[in-house]
Length: 287
Ligand code: C2E
Ligand code: MG
Ligand code: MG
Ligand code: MG
Image (cartoon, rainbow, N blue to C red; front, side, top):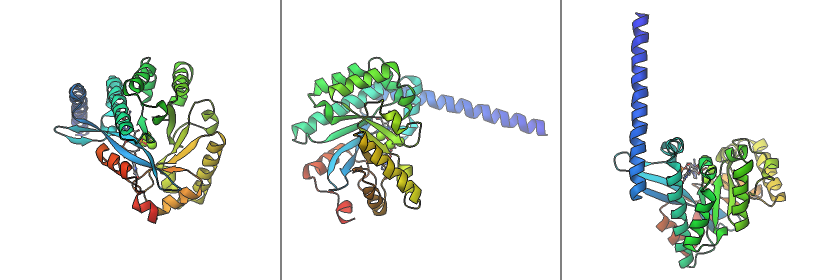
C-alpha cells in the first residue's frame, strides 16, 4: 500500500516536472516570438519624486509582457526564464532601445530634465557587448548619457571584479548613472559601494515597510542615508505605500521616493502627460 502510494506520488511528481519543463519551453518559444514583433512588450513608468517638493524627477521603467493567452505577465514570471535561456540579451536590448526612444521623445517635448531608470540583469552586464549596446542606444537617440540610469542588484558586486567593473567605469565616465537596486537584501555593504561607480542607492521596500513598527530599522535607514551622502550617493526609498511611511522616510533625510502612495507604474503616455503638467501628486502635497 505504502509502496503503491509512493509510486503514485512519484508518477504525479515526475508528470508535474514534465509539465513545468514543457511550460517553460512553451513560454520560451512565445517570448522568442514576442521579441521578433515587440508588440506584446511594454515598459510601464513609475514616477520617482524628490521628497522635499514632491516633484517628479523621472521614472523607473518596469517591463510587462502582454501574453496573448496568459494575460499580462509581471517580470518575475518570465525574466528568470529569459536569464537561463539567454533570451535576456535580446530582451534587455529591447528594453534599452525602448528606454532610449522614450528619452528622445521626452527631450523633443522639452522634458529633458527627466531621468529614466532601467533594470539591468547581472547576466546582461556580464555580456561582452553590453557597453557597446548602451553606447549605441545613447548615440542613436541623441540623449544625454546622464539621463539614463542603470539599476543593478547587489549580485553584481559579487562579480564586480574584472570586466563588469571595467564596463561600469567606462559607462560611468561617459555620464551614465548606476543605481544599486533593492539595497539591504543582499550582500552589498556601503564599504563595497566605494569600489563601484554607483550614484544612487535604492533602499529596498522591506525596510520601508518595517520602519513603521521598528525604531531600530528607522535608525538603520538613517545611517544608510547619511553614509551614502558622505560617499556622494543619493538615496531612493522604494515601495512607499502610506503617508506615514512617506513622512518617516523623509525624516531620515532620504531625498527621493517611489511607491504606490505616490503613483503606481503606469503607461508611458500617461506618465509623459503628468510630467508635462508636472503637478506634484496630490497625495504627497497633502500628506
Ligand atoms: P524592482 O526593480 O525592485 O522594481 C520595483 C518593483 O516594486 C516593481 O515590481 C514595482 O511595480 C513594485 N512596486 C512599486 N511600488 C510599490 C509599492 O509601493 N509597493 C509594492 N509592494 N511594490 C511596489 P515589478 O514591476 O513587478 O518588477 C519586479 C522586478 O522585476 C523589478 O524589481 C526588477 O528587478 C525586475 N524588472 C522589472 N523590469 C525589468 C526589466 O526591464 N529587465 C529586467 N532584467 N528586470 C526587470
Ligand atoms: Mg529596479
Ligand atoms: Mg528594487
Ligand atoms: Mg526588486
